[in-house]
Image 1 (cartoon, helix red, strand yellow):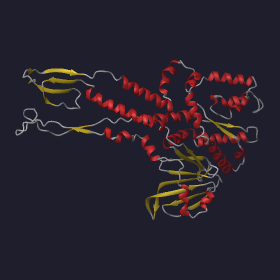
Image 2: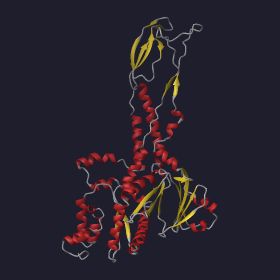
Image 3: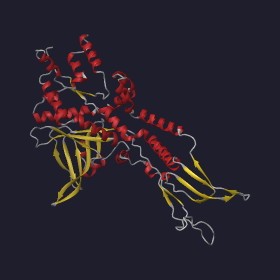
Length: 472
């Protein structure tokens, strides 16, 4: 069903049709895991435990003896805390994904520059994107929400009290207190978004938290407070101002088991180092007292005794050391880390020394990140909705400025890499392409990284040459 058919039903049936997610996921679980709530914290095998200790006679400093049985008296148990190490690989994976995908501002390209008024209207659109809405910065916030929660949405709007009529943007995400469901028609196009959130309102003169349900469509926005009826507010743009982003799983999902494995191995290894990594002192003879497990240097107290044949065994002091290195564990940990970076996003730290010494050119670095560019290419399927964002902004500008030329703009979005590139090589290549007739000067200027996507550079160049814009 499409949204018009759903809204033709009685109101009590709307949400049953709209609050449906085609992907099985728990957004709150994703957010909790990202914030460090990992399974190891509740793993029974990593629970704390206790060991029994002898009761100590305060006068002699020796274990108390039961006069009836002659046995040592048990004292209070010692509580032993097991290490439960949280490795925040998920944050590194998300941060790298955000940086690789949208760390560099996208480039807006005007494909209809020859049409009257298009360059001027395009300059307004770029200004709204870059400076008013600050979407290049917002892209990072939005992408982080998407990669963590696996779905989010943005709403573009113009404050009616803003005399400049600048476009603004707001993020709908679980972290921000929003539960959202997108609805798609039979052709797979999103035609509605349902949002449920809590808002502080005045109820009968008293401040109170109330649940608000909104349904956003191209025709209107419907809002209900608590269990009340929906009120309709007309959408002045005749276009849904919502842009919805979705992926089936959080960015680290495929390596969740590897992260848990690393946390368990390293937690156990930490406990081993804590117990036996420091020297253990053994005094040969009859054991008098157990050492404190938490001591850095553990002393086992003993006294002379006799063996099975009645021969005397004198006390002796020895150091116990753990024989053998941890090569196998270290190798396993390193292999797991390599697998995690192969399956998600690369560890960028290894580039530091190479870049400092100038050992790698921009081209060489890009070749090393071939797998990453494949992932970025796949992510563009998710970020195709940037084109929808442009479409919504064009419509808002057309209505608020009273000019249909914004609707006629043919604009595409180009993603840029954060990896360093050899600007001189790229400039030489573009210059050669222009001289050879392979591309136009306008296209070369648009693709030059030193211009930062400024649509007016070619006009400025022509002006400096004393030419009219567009005649070069």
